[in-house]
Image (cartoon, helix red, strand yellow):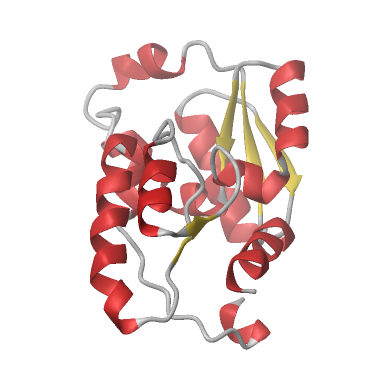
Length: 176
């Protein structure tokens, strides 16, 4: 997306497993932003709140950073109104992105211990009633992985093609 749009942007990713520990996100963002600030005219944050309950916003205020809008990346991909409808229709909705479809075995099953203790399935997923894949770039391989993810926790899969237009709009606003 950055290359396609010709944006003068360097991406400095943080470990994706931070999403399993959102209480660490704000500190990690602070550390990398402070490290990058002397080398860049502007630093922006490619995170929504992501479960930090405002801690990320506090870091952004203190350091004068802009971040992606929304409570989580799902808002960026699907739109907050659409997500609200999903949850109104079926409160037990588990959301899946392309990244999560690709990494579910590692980021969810292994991290939660379900690969070693499958009896924990109901502890973690017993109140979920479906998995919704917010498909940014759907293809046969990703569909297979999303289906495997849903099956591994015993949920039916619903596919909603979102594309990456929401993310592109949000990023365009950050780099403008």
